[in-house]
Image: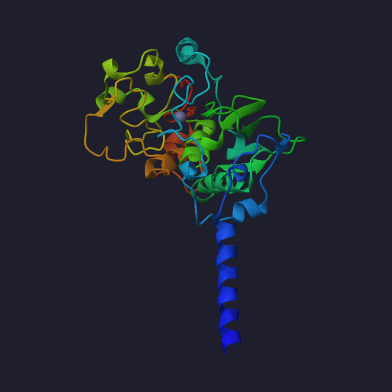
Length: 319
Ligand SMILES: [Zn+2]
């Protein structure tokens, strides 16, 4: 009897230790910059890792901003040399532009490679974020095949979180450093790459939010750029405070006071970086003409050249 109970204790401790060991993630399982970097892709195991336990990166000693998608680039985390120049160039294209600076990915298929410096935890979280697209939209992230795919995303831990908007050609960087390894943050960055700007860049945003310019930190005015309809399309969807692409109320505040004040109700989730809103999902499905996506007016969208929602570019001739 005695032996039995000690065996029981031993087994219990072993099980507990195994569970503990399995649950602890180290910084290196997020990003390990000491290893050689090459272009890798995710495997089935990464996509199958459900990651029931997701970590608060702070507990791993990783510095995370309140909103990691607020970076140091134009429009926070959109990699553009000059948003103003971008808008001017697009406006110049005027009515005759079939050419688009940013384009949709053919068939909604987005080839990618991934840095070998990501550890198993980061790979699982990135796969989880891609799965959000795979389960809710027809956009599909596929491992790049160099013999087929010239244009692709290169996902790597460069500096903060950033992305370009839409397909820009060639090897297109997406940065997710260790502070960005959270599903909502990655869904946000990938949505830029899919073709979307920030929600508050919409042409009609002044009806929905006030930008409190005196609270915006010096030099950050550009972060609140607004695009006209030559640049972005709203895809017949309403302004969406709950979009995963909307800035939060304190974005780029220099004073600790609010920089964005909603003018209407329904803004409780403004700035959330947890998951797609329903409207986000509909817009992606419309942009890519997904079979099950869009609403009853999806036919009216299939004929236009518009690229995005609060997304990009394109000038549909207004005859
Ligand atoms: Zn962003």
